[in-house]
Structures are given as structure tokens and as C-alpha cells.
Length: 97
Ligand SMILES: [Zn+2]
Image (cartoon, rainbow, N blue to C red; front, side, top):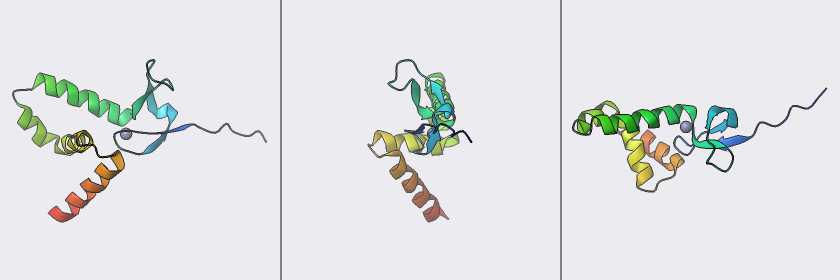
């Protein structure tokens, strides 16, 4: 039996999950040729950026609708690692229940 090549893994810098490289969009400027965030998060990030630009006046409305993402970004901006941010989110959810 032939050995399967080991799928290189990468940690998404937004959700903190490990995914195989194929789950990352190609990015010519990055060291390994792939983006820093998984496909899911990249899509969210693009959406987030577009919305932020498009609805800067209605930014609060946008925050309400996308509170989870917005909070995660706030945490990341505050210097938390994705894993810490996720843990913090879980805690917040448990407390609000
Ligand atoms: Zn991700």
C-alpha cells in the first residue's frame, strides 16, 4: 500500500481551528502561499469589511446583526489569541443563559 502524503495543516488566525491547507484560499503574498484565515472566516471577513465600508453610517445596526463576528474581532484587536477569544465567547454565552 502506498503511503498517503501528510496533509499540511494550518491554524486559522480567526477561529483558531486547524484545517488542511486546501481549506485556505491561495494568497501569493503569504509565506506558504495560503491566506491566514480559513475559507469560512475569509468569507466572513470580506463580508465584514464590505459591510463596514458600505454601512459605516449604520454601523451599529450592522454590529447588532453580526454581534458574534464583531465581538470576535474586538477581542482579536484587543490582542487575544483566537483560542482565547473563542473561550471568552463560550463563557459569555453561558453567562447570558
Ligand atoms: Zn477560521
